[in-house]
Length: 326
Ligand code: BT5
Image (tube, rainbow, N blue to C red; front, side):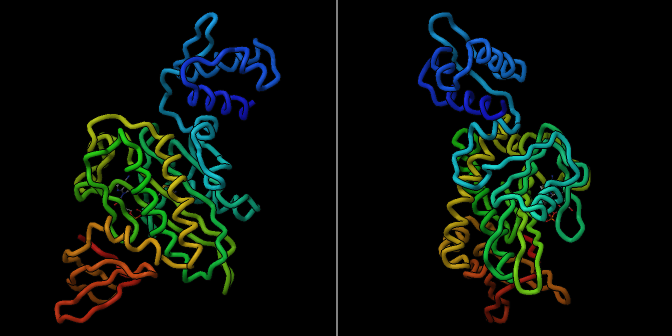
């Protein structure tokens, strides 16, 4: 049922004009009434589908939903985001994917939620993801790499999210999407996206990796504490943005970038474009180390994803675990 709905949606989207009821009946080997019922359901869910006698059906507009059918009808990938689990509300999509990973789910399984009740940031911080306005998603990866290579996946995802957003032509054409090393995506200096990578490991090998992405899509207001530092696509672009096509575009880029990463096991094929998107590049940054804080000039990243900085005394350093503030 879900598969047929997703496929009908896909056919309607790809059609050049109308698709006849007859065509749909033949394709799925079902009655006209069965097709009509699916169309009715879609209309009830907010899809604007026009039905014209002797011509057939035509899709005019879709609602801003991220349901399994909606995502399946848009997904243009081989494995990334092909197996979708959708939640109206969930504690944290990262937690769900970790559990699904433990239970043996296939690589590329994507959990998507309209709202999280316990969204998580790094180091025990929390992530706000209000209903109807944001994307919360996590993907399951099963890379054959060592645990010390896994943090690079955050950068692979950051690149993919930035590129995916830019691929959606009507979204933010004029605005500059940038990456703040290592895991934030920002516009005009404000945080638009956060990424959280977590892994389940043995001492020397990885069971699986969960990469979670939170995107502020249509939020128009933020809690007091983050109001100054956070923004959304809607606020920056001046119009509402549909979430499902954005997810599909990001998955497409992730599939390509992940392949480039796995070819070498590092970022040598991605560091150039990552550095180009880097907001910190050629700027002074504050390195917040475990013990000391210091100002340095950021030059880019190296192939293992560390930030290359020039300290005030001229020495070059590669910053690994530190945090950077712009
Ligand atoms: C992050 O942490 O930026 C990683 C966020 C990852 C969220 C995704 S959503 C899907 C998946 N499931 C989860 O449970 N998590 C992932 P960090 O760099 O530690 O930033 C967290 C800080 O950002 C918070 O302490 C706030 O100050 C701020 N913050 C919280 N919500 C925000 C939002 N919606 N937009 C911008 N900033 C926010």
